[in-house]
Length: 482
RNA sequence: GGCGCAUUCGUCUAGCGGCCCAGGACGCAGCCCUCUCAAGGCUGAGAUCAGGGGUUCGAAUCCCCUAUGCGCUACCA
Image (cartoon, rainbow, N blue to C red):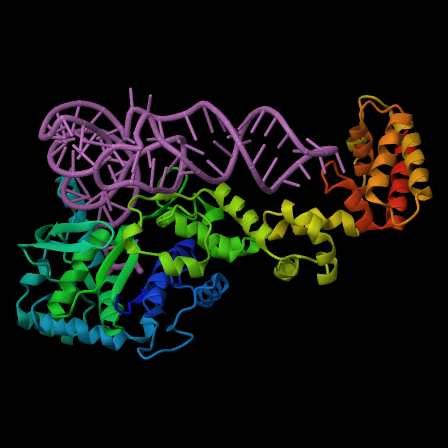
């Protein structure tokens, strides 16, 4: 395959969106596997929704995800600028070319007239579309109104006949009747282009060969194709990917899925970018061998647009969390410790020390401190955790004292086999119904929790002094609570 | 309303005419391991392949119709 030039074109309108990473993933893979380039372009043509901080956050989010782009606003490239707001003269010139050729026209209709028109159309059960009021204006009048500086837009003059057909790489042939397509606004009255003009002009000028985008764009594609034809340009290849869905199967949205849409949210909670990317890849594509776990490099190698899925996928947070845990388990301790640094208040040495017993229990990096806390600070005992069906707190208290004395007498370093045998024997001597009950008593005493890594490992990590101190503290807590 | 796209276990999917009375993954249940929680291993429940017509010796797979869902229908992308 010839080198593909692909692009992702987010709008800097707020929080970096998961869809940007999702779309980037496929475009990135296609560019990389063909030895082409992947481009980032800022579609900042909406002055109303524009957020000045958004752009930098998008750069950071893509960098975090590991989706390196070859050209973009912050890295430059042969087709700069990569920010649409800095390309206004280009769009203006192209819009004028279209007008000159009769493929577009000036429109002076006010928002009020447009609104009234739509209302009427709706009342008559007609599809809402522009009535071409300004197409009929005499050229002389257009010139005088333009010269007078009257507010206006440029509209695309759609053909009244014919069918626009294109072959989508993932869905096959798709056709639209030209006469049913509205006369799309190309240039807004504020001098900015709309998406439709800007995307076509830029994709052509930037020599984009493959356009991969969400399926919500399918119905806009004929407008874009017609523009290519009006300009006399070669068409790019289109491939529309399935949508990411909310649990109710509607297009994923911040309002319905606040925990799934913000890219920064995934980072904050401690998802590994490789897990997120792997998961997203599976939402829009399937591996030819049915493999579910694969790296970005592997994805780049085996990706093919033909295997892109056709229907939208519900974003299953549960599975992502599972996958994140899986990736965490595959990491070497040193590597994991490093990755935990932004998420923990503990030192790298501390993290490395306890990680071996915590790694299998970690699903999100952000949960590490909660899991590790008892290693580094004496627990605050929750009296309820000590409750036993068999013993009252007085009895529990004496058992703890006995266990403490037994540990104190055990030669350090404690041997695992000897230690465990000792605990079991002690449980029997103190007439515990199950040895496990004694283990649990000690677990709560040592960790302040009912779930923890294996007791022996935990005590060894804590050390003799700290273990004895906690047994004392628990004993005191139980004794004072009467 | 119009146009478009889609439709296999709860969810993500495999399947491109016979190997499928449908396989895998997450989740769920049980068992094993086990001092708890995880991790891991095993087993199981779970889909009349949206419905109806065709085509064919044979259809989840091809064709048509219907239904449903979703997307678009802005001087937002």
